[in-house]
Image 1 (tube, rainbow, N blue to C red):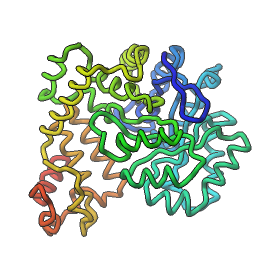
Image 2: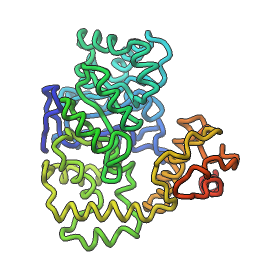
Image 3: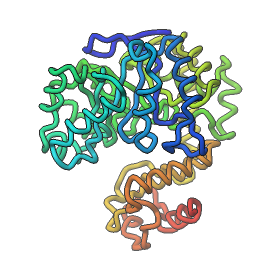
Image 4: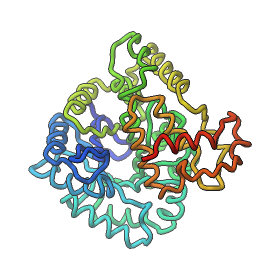
Length: 384
């Protein structure tokens, strides 16, 4: 196992972290609370035994059962072998006093008296301004740190690049951040520029979604020739992970492993994880993949956001992004799951079903996309 410094925290972390949002479950659903504890414990212990020392979970993962599971799985000495990370669900906090109540509940769930890495979860411009700053949660986090309940303060992020800079610069006490990043997300959310900026400020950078929710492990057959004709034979998973590990600014990446085969493969890949490892030929392969994926998207949306805001609340670019997954990846079940999760997380207010065909967006679209007709197609595709 390879280890890297996690920013200015002084901690050494394994380049491969174990993400606990997609543990194996008994009913086959993606994020159900019905965790297959026997199998999940075997996977987690195997990874830890081979040097993985960063375990990441969250308050609401697996219908709020992930933390409880981790607490049970890390008994018999395993807690002392890992850096434990979990998150404050700031998007759900309405009153300042809820911060401490939730933290204490998490400590009880996790069966520990301290959490090594504590993140403000899924921070956006709105939750940053209204909740984290508005309810003065950071002084409460600092107090918890002084009391020994948490080790390091960070945040996970889902918003645009400018919002990321505002949040990074909005608090001098940040020690690390967690962002979505992979070879298709160089200009998505924080993006490559945000990643490098956070690192330049001394923050450790934890990467989530290096496989884009598993979709990069199963790319479309339209992409397969690039892998097959590459100068070196590597699996799609290894190409994706190596791309992230190649960057010296990355402290570690999280993988939501839910099968022993995934654990074993990732452990092998992690042994060879080096910053600056990719050759010029390797980078040409990555560039070819990026170009090809862009070409095969079903809707030619460039995410310019000229179509927004929709008067009926539809997140037009997000609907297109999920729909394009059907063309780009060989993962229809995962893609439909993405749409269901999107609908659930937005109370069904931003999905294609809310399009009324007013055509206001079509007058603004520089790509001249027939947005209303496409929304109807999306609605039919993901119905039921």
